[in-house]
Length: 334
Image 1 (tube, rainbow, N blue to C red):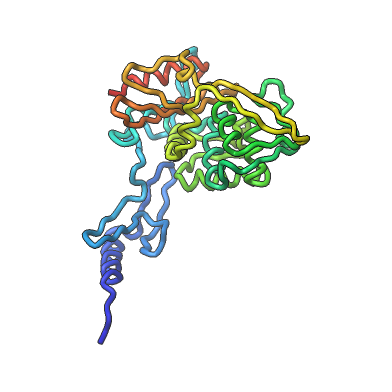
Image 2: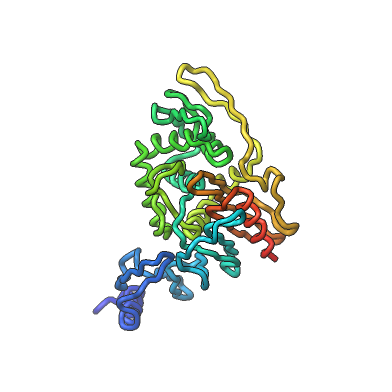
């Protein structure tokens, strides 16, 4: 007697049908590059995954749940220079109608401290909030115009403390603290960042440090920032941190003595100096500003029904322009 595995037979039959109709499959992802990839039922990297239950068999797209703008997807020229110019801007309804606004979504620009969103993702994926991090010499930032808390070699704090200082105060030395403890070095952690970005589909991005201080090889797009931030806000811890208005903590020096630090969130919407439309609640986000990057802001907001929206503005001519553009986009939310 020949025994037949019904599930294997079914999968084989479906694979033959798909290979006939779609082989090789052309995967059109978020980037400009197109990838030819043949169907392979045993591979986790093909365009379809099979979800089998006793009642039905379904085929789910590779990028299910990810919004793609159907209009302005080409990397375009930045808007003309001037007091109200910006490089790119997008607004995404993450659960409903997709993109509500898109301008230069794939323009490659510098992210500045929005980088720290990916730093937080990688940190939580590879460590635990109660892990103790210890600073080395690379965590000492002496530049006067760099946002920092003033770490010294031997200073220590938990990852939870570090994430608050990273995302609320945007401390660059704390970003470095996370990198060297979790990645072993700046370069090691950057490799982890790039691997995670690639996994999330952010293929027009490249990162060389955990903080976003200027480097010509450190870049992203508004669309990639949406992909990264969309992943970040799946974490309850990150959502809680980015929505914190004020934060105070105590960490330790190498000799065991305590050091205290207090800060306010850099997000103007949370501080009340920028105002969202009446029907919109700003949950939180991440700012970024350098001379090369201009004013940047990626943000999570909710409408009166609790639906999530992600906005991102990059290379505002001023940080005021960035906030004004963000508020203007939020007015598109019903």
